[in-house]
Length: 331
Image (cartoon, rainbow, N blue to C red; front, top):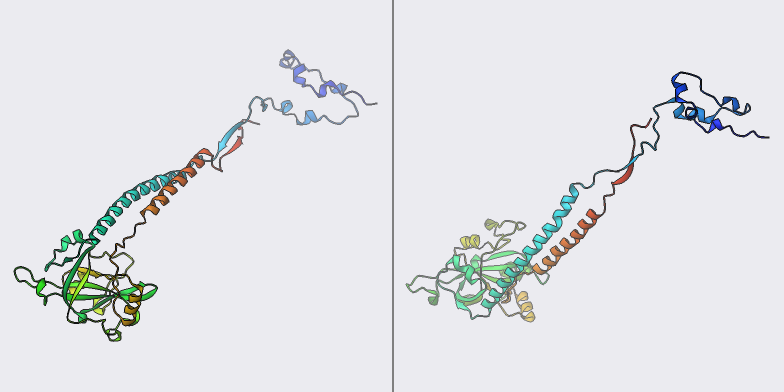
């Protein structure tokens, strides 16, 4: 028959020993006498810190604390906040650019519908800006010996060149000024020819008109070179973009650029290309106006990044975790 478990195994001896006895170093009552002689050593007496260390502190008296470990938000949040602001500013700027481009195209189209003006004998280069895309006509003799080719240029998928020929107006009496001064020569962009017709000897009859001719076209501003276009090499006769000032200096003409126009006709264009006759441009405004797409792009980016920023601020970062801080006072 098993003996009952002694009370001393579940009670702390210090609780039953009066303080006055402990202070006088008197022996306290022990429950070892009531232990079962056949039972092994007490696990409580072997592993209880309170029996060996009087400074023991319970976890109840000093509980752990829940803290957030890790950095809440770093510099990436600042960069993410700048993206929607920048995109919104660029979208607003594109709205302003759309209004400017729309007014510019309307101004050019208004000039196109007007009757062509005779080109004056001498032209103020600084005033060409006020007559950009204005239809004009001039008479004179084409100087094919000073012809310049700009290219390569693609037309309907074929490689070719733009034919630039000086127009000598000195032999035209109608181009003389009131005081009898001779009119200056101008540069005429006659149009596009295929690459196989680069040499004048390969072109057929009608490609190099002689005598007095009348050219009708658009008065254009000098072109602006972009950063991806190589520099012209006049000494080698290689031109990659229409540098009006440079080409006028080479040909000895005024820095005036006229683009010859023709009615868009597919059959006529094929016939001209086969003979090497330059294909003139259509009398229309060919300015690109993609600002509406840019507006939707930038405003859409601003909206998307704003939502992302709200989600990041609302949700704590992944490296933020609740951890139990170790209590240094535990023994």
